[in-house]
Image (cartoon, rainbow, N blue to C red):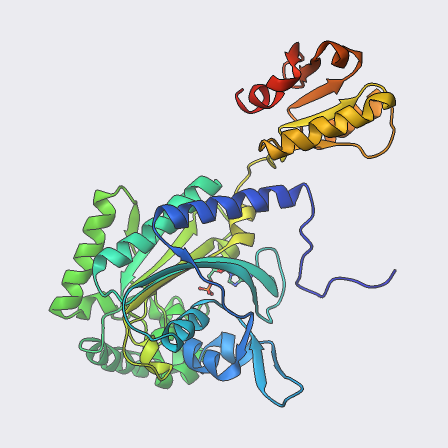
Length: 408
Ligand code: AMP
């Protein structure tokens, strides 16, 4: 066959998909523990949403969107990120009050594919809308941190910055623009072009890193309320034991990002993919989408990268494998499998008549920690259970198999 998955996309098959499932469950669990409800938004949206909600001047909008016309002549785009769609949904459904939601799903960007940089990739995230308090920022940072630690990313660090707001940012941008203007000749072509529109993005340019090393930073120009907000976020993080480093170079280059910006860095990873996620406050976003003003803060994490970074072995997806010692016992064995599944035990069995050896091999391949052997002892009301890790074997009453397997 010469059909292939499109460039920059991946099939996630077992056993790697077992880790995916485990990690996505852990995500759902952390989101719930912090009180985030589920939100689902469309995988494609009107192109204009991203032009406004991600920003015309960004690389994502200029070069990376999968945009197409549908049969009705509408311009649609596969979502390159999750926030714009969530804020659109919030505004479309009234746009007032507090809303805490978590999402997860595939995102699409036309990138040059490499490890950890895919054209279809998977993000999870939360958005905390309608609340301006620094408690919301700290909480969002914490939920991401707790999850990534559990997912096993080594050397995790939170990089934190504040970008100011509509009061102090204009002064800062004037100062920065002036500073960059004096060094115009040393900047790359891209930076010279973005400098007028979006000078903060120049701080983020990999090529101009050395030139901008001494540039004024947004934190040095914060107004009183922005300073207080930043201090409150940091205090709460300290109090809750979330380690962070202040990074005055960390920017999100669009006007609707305000105050808090952060990234999660896996310091032991390759620099090209060491950012496993990030986020920030975006109090100007609702208005730039044409809605009434609404504060918000959120984060997005790249699951592909979280998994690249964590070295955990794929977990077993089974509690036990049922081995049929003699095909004449298949009916009772299948009845036992059905009962166990209904009792919440994760069990599997081969569908074909195979040797004991082949069945044990299958159990092993699937990573089952135990096998339940249905043989002639069934007539005495018992089965043998073999612990595949220790090699111990025990006789267990049929009615007690479920408790034995999950109670270990
Ligand atoms: P961003 O929306 O660009 O701030 O990205 C947030 C996170 O999503 C990043 O830190 C990455 O973990 C992940 N991510 C972004 N783009 C890609 C991509 N092309 N492939 C894989 N992961 C990505």
